[in-house]
Image 1 (cartoon, rainbow, N blue to C red):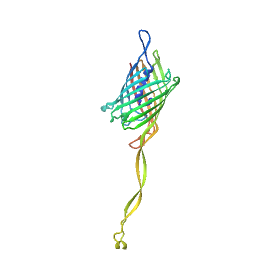
Image 2: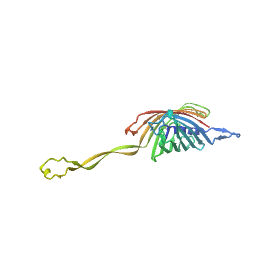
Image 3: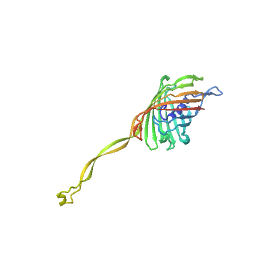
Image 4: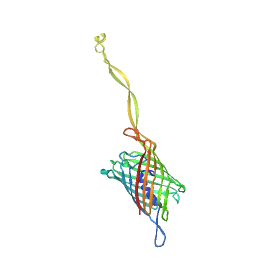
Length: 313
């Protein structure tokens, strides 16, 4: 996954932010440069298995995500993403999300900066994708890329789900843009690779089994033997009261902040004027992940990829 949040959301946002960094100019009749006020980025992404913070649903399916993003020259943006299930005969629309936000920089070369955003989800509750339980998220990032050597990004996401539960997700990421070649007058076109390593931590819920012991009194039938006393006094008690220790298995829901996953990815981006193509393979290693059916750990390495294209007007 790239940066924080959802894989594909950040890919699309990254495309928009990249577009913002490439503000093109036109010339009016007085030969003075004119900067466009608003840029429009339209794109589509295919992702083989949508994940969130290194987590995925076993029932998750491939998705197509068309998007439209408006970016102002002042750094404000508004993005809308659709979610289309590509599950063969069961394919169909699952919903959409809307994200307003703001991209900012602390210096003219954009070596230091960040972004803040909020996302509202409108996804069918019965959807097989992992986002179906989400109601909204609030997200923020800060990055440092001194002299464009290596970029370090930290982020946080506060998640609201449809059951009124809240989760916190944090990320730490290292990435490096490597251009295979550059073209164009501004040298912003061309082919580049961005090896990226991301660490995820956050809260998650699981069920913990524990045992309790209690003292219980109970009566036990006492076999009656034929004795002279029983014959003379036939109404002798036939039960004995005893105290017994009973062990009971219980489960409780536990919410704990812990390491969630490590992700390695390699976005491959080709920019040709207003058009951008991107392909990203991911290897993800989850940690502390529990299979709720068997209540056992399932932390195996898995692979996924995304690919897409966008055009900026």
